[in-house]
Image 1 (cartoon, rainbow, N blue to C red):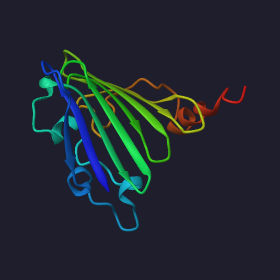
Image 2: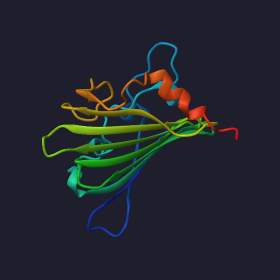
Image 3: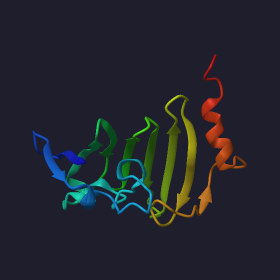
Length: 162
């Protein structure tokens, strides 16, 4: 497996590349899991792999591939780690966009949009939290109202075969 991070820093003309091992990029997979399909990245923020301050980062693209299959994770740093857009494409072609903004109150507003490979976009998360955009953050305030998670997911299929 190969993992390559391509990134651009503010004030620099050319992007940089950083190749790393899958064990440096992913947490170890559980019993019976495959690294590319199932493993979770070690860091929530891509800039944590680089060892540079988030304010210096303009964008990062992380690609992992093995045997003709790949994943893609792109991050655009709009104001250091205070405003980040991430676009993720998993090995099956499913996509996710995550918009994370730290508010002046120090809370985080996070919106996650999901797009299955053969469907359309739907809101997965729209929430305010105190802990930042972590994988398992409990929402201090959930803006999805009465929509259960499964309902939000099923909306991605509504109107797709018109």
